Image 1: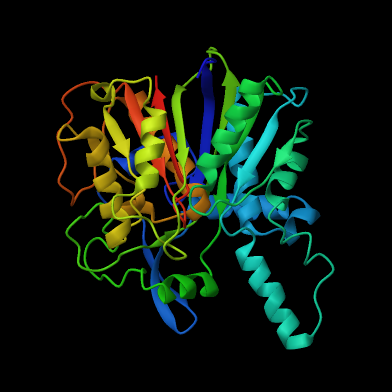
Image 2 (image 1 turned 30 degrees about the horizontal axis):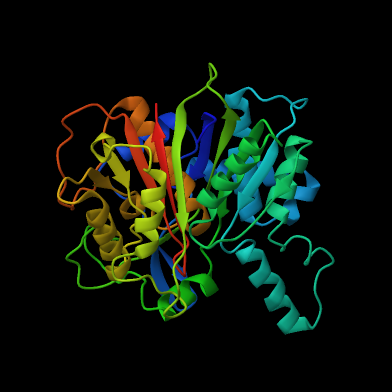
Length: 384
């Protein structure tokens, strides 16, 4: 990467909270954020917004008549984006691009409008514009009164890191100097939970940790869903606001064996990690934040891919899904935030039930992985 790409701010809203102090404090706790909530005829573990964040979203919704018709995926993105550009010091006069994606988009609102249609044969006037995938970035742009390009996309669970890749491509091309990138997801709905159960990957655990992400010996799948949004501000060069530097990026896909397949040794991850690390000594990588969704195959194949790249000298390994669940398209940027916080605080956050090495040196470089259905892998190397 010939040009230095800085992260000058990062912000999120999730079960962990909506400010960096609360989020970091929650990361240092061995408690998870899951609650049991009823979805249709069954209960399920999920990681909903914390109470403070729920109030903030409700206040935003009531602050403007137009916002009352928006899906939570949009409201989450607006909230996180406001916080990020304030931290970065971006002004309304600045020209910056926006790329905030989502795996599923306006899930709750779409389900509501479809149910209304089935029951009455009619839909509300705003049913279509408020359920398009593109309405996330467009509403963020409206709220921030930005002047640059606005982009939305869905690349399943690696959506947020693909947004980061796209922002970097714009910056390196010279077509933009600043880009706001990330992902937003509000998937805690009856239909979405039912879909995950149909795949036979949703957690049925009733023990201390419902999601056993990074437990390589688990005997049953343990994916749990969470909701949230996370975005970061990208700029060319180092500035007095730089909180981390993107040192390497990698991406890859692999040929599908079936609709949700990833190969036994996650070939896509091997390729994406190699690309991200092509200018880095492997011994310089201090930690990896794994995608690790909590499924038997998903966790194990990624681990095997890491072994293929690093051999016996593995970096410290961790994930945040045991704590906040899988937030689909937002998950990659929440992992980026975790990496930035670990670098800033020089403290490795492990998984309480997983075998892990002890941190023996300062954290200088952290690799973040994400992958979506069909092997759409992204790896991002961060440093201070």
